[in-house]
Length: 207
Image (cartoon, rainbow, N blue to C red; front, side):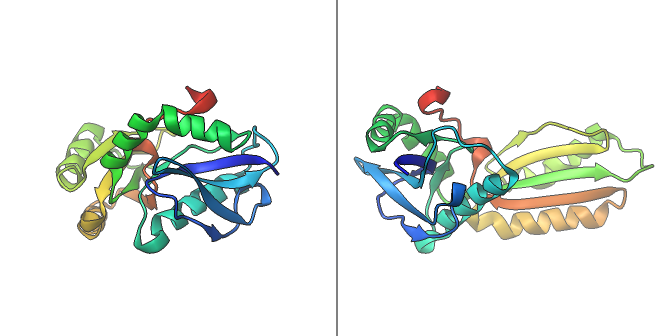
């Protein structure tokens, strides 16, 4: 399996551990170019199929990397980034270096948290007032937030927040307090994730 499947980019060359990796691989390791490292596992294709299982494994490996060695900042890649070999990968690291550096500075020490609010079956919700209420409670604690698609008619709010690790507990408490105050809503609070929603580095064929 000579191809390399990429999870994300770190600021060193030290990440290496055994784990269940994408496409049945059993270890992840780092390929480096001038202090930037791509965390990879071996794979036998450059066009991996996105199964539910592998998509979940991709997320879990990213989480393990974030916890690695007392906490490691990783610029996460979307599922499916695979390269023919080390040389191609090092070319990408070289070419996108300034973008990776900027992204790394933006997300260092931060995690992504997701909040979905679903209205109960027969509840009538003033969406604008709700958005204002949520913004007032959560925006001051978060570094940034982005709006995501409302993919069902009962989903009234869907946002991702970039939150400093040090503010995580404060943010958790604010969400819990909001949930206590709103009976007409189901609160789906998820994370922490690697900050996908706040990184916009396209590499390789994705450029």
